[in-house]
Amino acid sequence: MTNAHTPSPTRPLRLRNRGAAWTLVVLTPLIAELALGSTPVRMAWLVLLWMPVYGAGVLLIRELVARRGRGWPSILLLALAYELVEDGIGLQALTSPHLYDAASWGARVLGVNLPYFEANAIYHAVFTVCIPIALTNLLFPAHRGRPYLGVPGTVVAGVVAVLGVGLLRTVTLSEDPGYQAPTAFVLGVVVLVLALGIVALFVVPAPRVRTVAPGRQDVSAGRPGSSGAAPVPSLGYLAAASGLATLVFFGLSFPVFGAEQPAFTEGLTVLIPMAVTAVGVVACYHYLMRTASSPAWTPRHTLALIGGALVAHSVGGLVIMAHTTVDRIGLVVIIALTVIGLLLVDRRLRR
Image 1 (cartoon, rainbow, N blue to C red):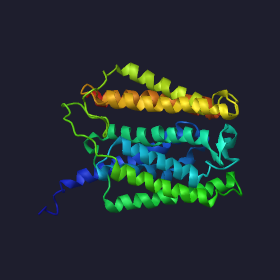
Image 2: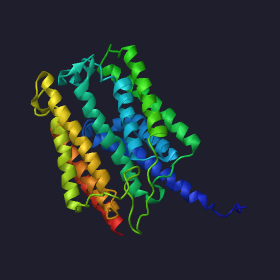
Image 3: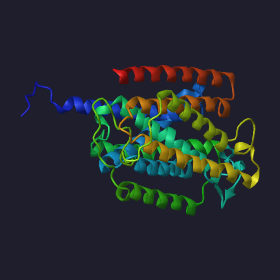
Image 4: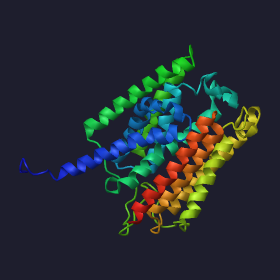
């Protein structure tokens, strides 16, 4: 029995788990909203409103996957479910003919804004879900793959996330007054989200376990085994490639430089850049899974991949989201702070 005056050996672990959980909760809206500029610096206080749906939502995804012993494929499926909940039920931008001008992006099929859906599904999967989780893994490597919360904490995260969706809907009513998504669509989203959850947590197989050399860290779970792994490129190459891929994604998926549709298309021709984007995302996923399965992959490679994407996504925000001088200056400052933060984390990893 532990003496009342002797610290419990599990107490530091619990404190670290809570620190990791709160880090993920805070990082998620900062990366997904503030660093993109969709929430401009002059309105940074709104991050507090987004924290329940973003922070608690992604924490819930991470906890469910960790408790089921699943990996990145399951996280990606739940990220798709997250997008359906946020934009299908909360914002209801997937079907709204007015909000964010999403209906003018072209290819509005059966009342659904398809280009908007694809763009945001990919964006949320990468920048709202995967990058915050991967970055938190780097900051708290001893807890990677372990639940941060107990069962009560996970339930609380789920409740807060649901309340966050309700809060999101309340805020959106002022931006898109009078619009309500069709009931059949909302029910369909609920069924699809439940189906994605079941597949992610009960159908997708658990990741293979492989031995990791001392000083190295397996960047992901759920990828193929080390057999057939692609050669690991340099840190600079990874950062540059992920940055370029991010900018290409923005150019193909979002209207830029005053265009109404992505990639300066008109009407259904938007399906072409949509198809190119989908093929590119699948190719990048398979390449990363093969490359990161190499024993030569280290946490610094993970950080380089994350860093290039983060910097490029704020650069993309300068073009897509920034509308005032203050917004642009704010994003430039965020880019500088991002680079400094990445260098500090890299220094920690090298130690």
